[in-house]
Length: 507
Image (cartoon, rainbow, N blue to C red; front, side, top):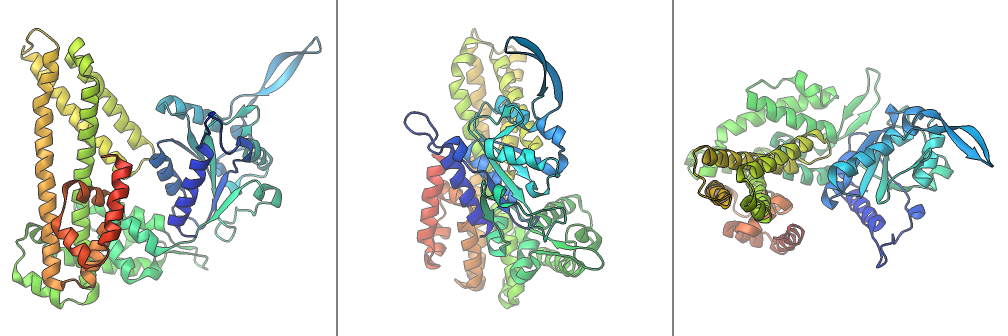
């Protein structure tokens, strides 16, 4: 199955395992909750989908690579304890708590959430000395004397032996205790993900034209040839950073991520061409609605691959702006909710100290989001925007306090927050309007250049599968997007997505 189908299977299984009946008992008894194992080639996104499921369900995610563990580190270290048996005293061997088990309790303590996923990567590469302990753990959820906390689900991942010389096939006794999900690379599914997650438009355009370049893991006399989904996404982040810093992108850089000479050279050449498209078409002018007739004529006469490059450049610009706006709006909603909930504290205590505490908490949440490799980019954006807003509020209240504007009660501190918060809300309203205008301008340009042709279909359909964009369209409206989606015969599906997003967001 592809990665999207695998995600649905993982999320369905975890929701079923965490389901409780009217008595609060698991609908699937603990001993019957088979650990999941995702089997597939490296770099396909196995870890990412499990982390995303955990984030979506609001539960903990703890990840370990089993190849890094020995029997001692996984089970814990032995120590001598005293015990009395049959009326006689004995020295007894016991084990300290496993590092892996301890990490799940640490996650519970840090998050306040009892449930979680323990993800064990490269499970079929465990050392031979650790294999018996792993069999016990997968069957009974225990390492030595210590049990995985209630409400935690084990998900494993492994590479088939043909991709990893250290990997071994599980014996039937092991496989009979696992819920196996086999995953294969699928460029179309990954492209949907890439478009809505900010993957560099040069990459999405290149793979739209040359899908066979998406995935390659093959042995060769000169060394392994490796091109994976992980490699493309990591290269995307590097390209964006290089462009921001004004650094030249070379074949040597591309080859570090696309470890196949032919693919790396082909993409490096295409990237140079794509960069020229970006400069020639003046994307900023198109979004402002000020593109001159020369650009429009070139777009009409361009070959198809150049047209798709232009579409992806516009898609990237529109979705990046919308994602930023949505992150700010989510942060504003959270801050407003917190202020409403803490209004009594602001009135009863020193307002500056309360805001200081809330700002410190926002800084800590941002640090945790950045430290956790499992937190999505969108969640990190929200955490960063929330931290920025609390810092603005903290500064405003500190200035108010320092200027001696207190007028007989801490309730005035709450009033002092209204001004900066409302200013932030007004700034967001202006950004929403600008993002909507840019979207309308992009649609108008594509309509003038191509009408309701394949180019418009690519543009609008990729927007329709982006949940963040669809929430933006649902919340703020876009007449031109609705009109074009109706003309392209997927308006009904778009409305379904809007309803789904509204249900998930609860807005």
